Image (cartoon, rainbow, N blue to C red; front, side, top):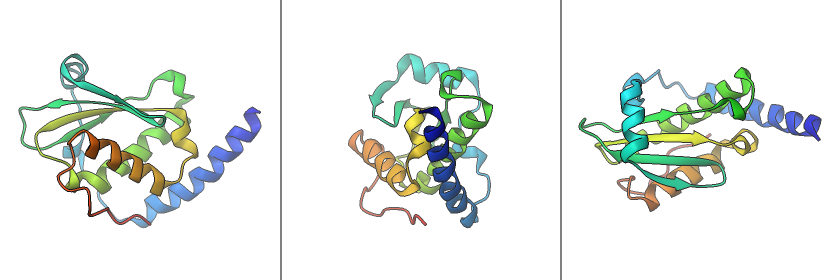
Length: 146
C-alpha cells in the first residue's frame, strides 16, 4: 500500500517539477508571510475554509499587498515531502497572485493528497476556493498553466 502511494507521488512530482521549471518566474518574497506574529494573527482573527486538498485561513491586513503563508506540519511526511508540498503552493501563489484582492493575509495548510494531483487541477481548486470567499478580483482570467 505505502509503496504504491510513494510511486504515485514520485510520478506526479516529476510532472509538477517539470511545469515548475518551465516557468521563468523569479522568487517573489513579498508575496509571502514571514513573521510569526502575522501567522498568529491570521489564525486568531481569520476565517477558515476547508477542502479535500488544503485548508485556508484568511483575514484583512494592514498592508496593501496580499500575502500568503504556507504551513506544513510533521504529520504531512518527512522533510522532503513537506518541502515538496511547500514548493507546490509557492508556485500556485506566484501564478495566481495577480488575481488576488489586495489587503489580505492568507495562510494555507496543504494536505497529503496535494502531492498526487496535477498542477492544473490544483490551480483550479485554489482559484475556486478563493473566488468563493471573495478573495479573487476576477475569476474569469485563469492564469496560464503549462
